Image (tube, rainbow, N blue to C red):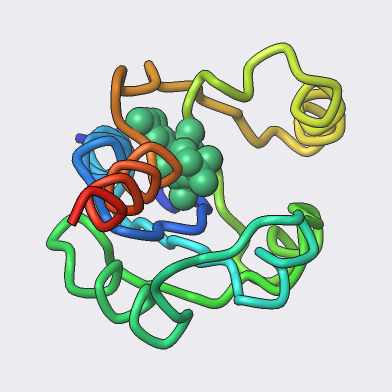
Amino acid sequence: MTKYKIGYTTGVFDLFHIGHLNLLRRAKEQCDYLIVGVSSDELVSYKNKRAVIPFVERIQIVQAIKYVDEAVPQYNMDKMEAWKKYQFNAIFVGDDWKNTERWNRFEQEFAKIGVDIVYFPYTRNISSTLLNETLLKLRAEK
Ligand code: CTP
């Protein structure tokens, strides 16, 4: 039996990699139904970043992962708005976010309604940023 009925996690999931897969696998181990919010291209640019892979492709890739029950678009960073919509019992996130001002605030807000925030160990030595930098370097060497 899993610990939670509905679990929720979010991300850009650009250049899908093993860190993403580890997070989704661990999340699904703890819930019956895993909903994954995939950041829209507009939300990514708002954070002063840019995804290499467009949203319509990123969400299809996430939806195809066997640990994912439902992939949904994430248009803003308001997790409480997402909760009103999806009524999840826990949020899963990499521990690169632990002790940040934003997630400390989420912890307080969600504790009031009995929603747990669960941090998983961030997979070392891989990120979308690192992959993209590597690709750019490879191209430049040509
Ligand atoms: N994540 C992880 N381990 C990694 C990369 C990401 O556990 N090596 C987790 C993040 O903590 C987050 C989720 O995967 O909960 C989605 O992260 P995302 O921002 O899409 O991936 P990154 O590769 O970290 O992207 P960037 O380099 O742009 O920050």
